[in-house]
Image 1: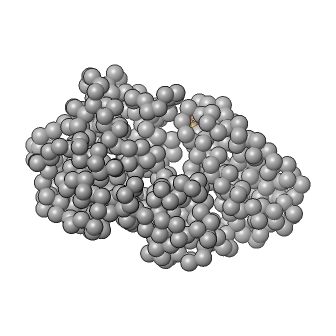
Image 2 (image 1 turned 60 degrees about the horizontal axis):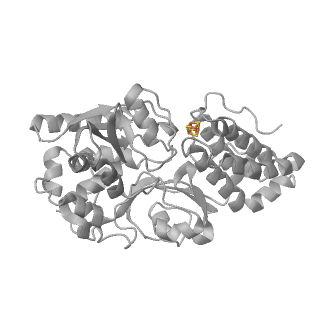
Image 3 (image 1 turned 30 degrees about the horizontal axis):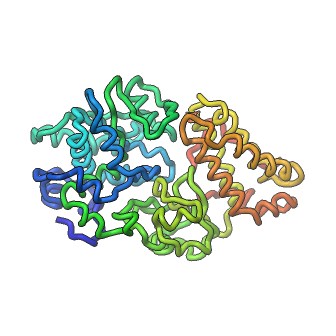
Length: 424
Ligand code: SF4
């Protein structure tokens, strides 16, 4: 039994190897007496940890009253290049995630669980496969569990793209004018939750809502898993109490106490200014700053970095990740990347580019089938705002030396055709 008000919860028992089923049950206690699960989940106030922060109970209620052959999909795709939390969780304790998925299946009456992990991550795939076999050998009651391994890319983890892939092996987001919207595999209503959300359901099902709420804030209860990256001495995945000061998260990872800015929520997120790092890490405190926890990425940019050049690299990669089925996304994102490059180069062309960027953002925002372009627009707007002094220098023809440097702080996968030369 994990005591209330104690961390770690999700990462308890973390070692070099994943917890076996026996070790997992010894640490967390068995789940046979799951009573009143829906009421406990409702009272827990759990919101999805995948980025959208949608109340988990609302998804369950939506699916519960549907008919047909239902599915639960565990999203372990981790499309964000800077995020490692679901992979870490599935590597440390896949059984906690699977427990939560089984509880969700029992709440909505699903007969199958599909757990999705990117095939590009064979170590995690192996851990999950082994856990599924371990459960099968024990002949535990419950729905069948299948492992699926779609190819990794940013939008492949978007829930409608994931369901699309399970349906016909195409990782394309589906247009959903009405949200929340019931996704379907074939004709079967499908509930999608990410691995961290499922693991939290696994805890709530064991210990109840009151235990869950003994960490976090009244409006944002529980713990959350954070991937801390960028200019830190010890890049790591941490489980933290929701509402902890961001400065304490940075200190644990050995970050510069006075960074230039901190990116929250991943590459569809936004920048926190250095003077705001005392802000509590929860959506309640971040919302007035137009920020959110999002995908749990906390990426530190040091003072010597060029924020505009870093933003350009991210946007160029995000443009490449568009699924190219919506015009504003397919054409608008490369145009944003091109304009940012012009700003990095500076001078008179940069002045025109910065004006165009604002217009382009307005045209793109809210016009895609999925939220991918909206995230890029949020990131671009925040970059223009937070790095405005740097941008002024670039436009006056005096870009910082860091813009010319090949050393970068934000992790961006290599593109097939990299820009060869930024400086002419
Ligand atoms: S908005 Fe972009 S990523 Fe989303 S479906 Fe349309 S083209 Fe694909």
